[in-house]
Length: 420
Ligand SMILES: O=C(O)CCC(=O)C(=O)O
Ligand SMILES: [Fe+2]
Image (cartoon, rainbow, N blue to C red):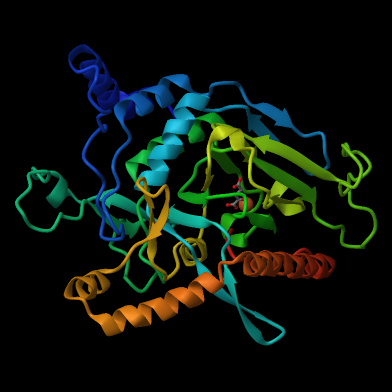
């Protein structure tokens, strides 16, 4: 992206930041503008404080990216870091506090049997595939719409067909697509300019502790097109990112196995391990997704560079509506919203309006019902069950790998995916 366009995007922030320095040095950071609202958001999403915006604009890349292509089929660009640690940690706290998260459950069918999977991390997603786009609604945006008239906030963005600009039929998507809020969209544009690729999706993972994870998988769904470029940004506590080559179709030695450095005994051959710290960014591109798997394994408590919890943001480009359906299904789903509670220092599941009303009216029977439900949910959260969940996910991956192998033999058709 041209520097001029980025300057225009960040200009209000630069002005706000310099004004703040001159007049009110001790007041809390000012957001760059009013919060983003949209019917698809559970609550408004604030804009970044102007000093974070300025630091992103002027401080990235904190270091130039290092290209890693010394393994077969691998093409990585590794920024260590892309965003300075201080800004990355502030961004981490902002996003954890201000984004709505989900703990998605979904069913898979294996051998004809329905199995329920609990995604072992918090997720959220924004964006729409390239057949549609969000455009400002002139009738709203030319009004002085930030004046509070006590009514509902007017919708400022309309979802339209990307070529004809005509409204999208509500039946086109299974979930209402969510526009990328400004606090992530500025970042998307910066990352676009750093990687010379375009992105229309922003997937966010929050790993609350070492027990949260993502199993080995590749982001090689057909809806991303061939040779997708995926930018993956890490914020907060450090976690290990592990990559391994997909098994070969003929079941012989993993390609590249003999070239990959094996540090320490007992470590499986052919794995690459990267300690992703706050602000680091890995770009996976070329034939990487087609040939390599990646994961964030669970790990014991401790480590993480002093910060508890980690956010990962991936920027991707989906080319067809199947991508939109898949991403909302597996990263938002149908469950309740979870939000960060600074007081208790953890994510808290949000009640819906009906439940709040019941609580206020003191409906005891319903409360008892809730307890039963909670108990069942908590039972599903103990360590043993989580182990099981992780294994469930690993087993899904095994199935994906096996299918991948058999499809490769049959001519390289892609597997279905659960949309990590
Ligand atoms: O957290 C990470 O670094 C990886 C996330 C990831 O692989 C994904 O969301 O597909
Ligand atoms: Fe991934």
